Image (cartoon, rainbow, N blue to C red; front, side, top):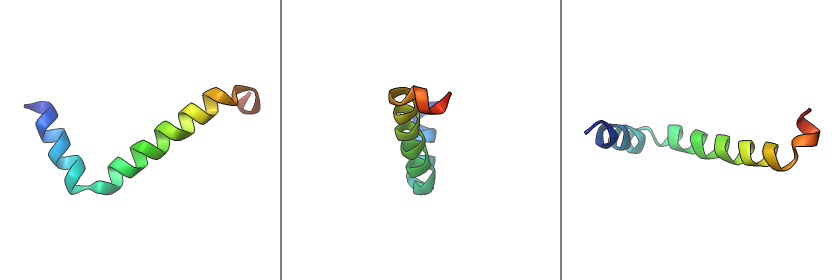
Length: 38
């Protein structure tokens, strides 16, 4: 039930989903180019 509420909230506030996806992309990019981050 908790997950269902989160999903509905995410759909209602689409920007949160976009931010999360953007964050995931940045995280993966940071891992791939770890040397640039250090």
